[in-house]
Amino acid sequence: MSAENIGVIATVVATLIALVASVIILARHFVRLENKIDRTREGLESKIDRTREGLESRIDRTREELENRIDEIRDGINQTIRQSNGMLGLFGTLIGLLSEQGIIEKKNFGPILKDFAQIGRIGEIHPNPLSLEEVTRLNGYIRRAQQGGLFTREEVEEYNSLVRKLEQEKPNNPDVWPLLALAALLSGLYLVNKK
Image (cartoon, rainbow, N blue to C red; front, side, top):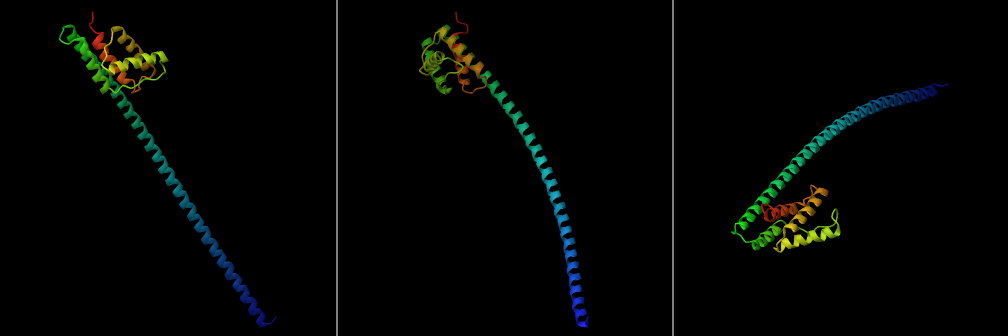
């Protein structure tokens, strides 16, 4: 072999060694980079998990607080309705007593009922749990109150019975509340302390 060939072989070998060394160095950098990426990914996943758990915990606490607040509001509304119905019943009773004393004539009950029915925004009732016949009678009583018509004691008792049936089926339905209020007023006007 000639010196020239040995020089070329030495150059090729040196180049190959340099190339292998470069590949090894690059491989080490890639391994370090991959490890760094894995640690970063694990750190991010851990952070995301902690954040998600924190958010879920916060959401659960907030939902529970909202549910408690809604229950408090619902209880307050129900208490207000009971008190309002009691006041309406008392109002009706006072008017009824004034009527018995001859201070207010029964014919004047009509405008009171008409005004109340307009303020209470009483709407038409639809079947369930009432039969079609009961709905027709109940809607007739509502229209009569809205027009300021007078009631008999028996009609008030039937109206109250129909409204109680509705309330038992739909105890917290706001559509029933004005009907209950009208029942309280009618009871006070026509049923309490009447001979």
